[in-house]
Image (cartoon, rainbow, N blue to C red; front, side):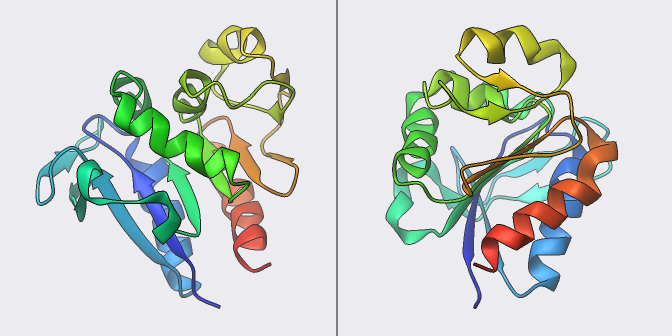
Length: 172
């Protein structure tokens, strides 16, 4: 069954942490919708390898229209968490127990949404203390699945495990 995945993203995302999961999701028959402040805006990954044209504006989307949330890493999540519209959008997925996939710095948005207390998760090493301060049971593992809802990974090298576990949740 095809799922609709909201992807919150802006400039300076980690190229492969967006492109590789997106490719895996699409190849499995799912729809990936990119969301930023401005529909039609072109954004670029921090390695300048991937350019994305934004599908929807954060002001025109509703979490209830999506089956899952994907938060690629890089500097994008840190920028997005400064905007309460993205924080509340992410919080809605966590509160509704919809699948959430966050890699590398992706969990920063969930920290700001105050949605990780008591959860098992991982992330890039530089945000370990931030995750722990947010109440996360931190695991230094390639992928952590919590409550059949939250999938987190650390770095681009973890993408195969991240994709595998995200696709398992999408197929439930």
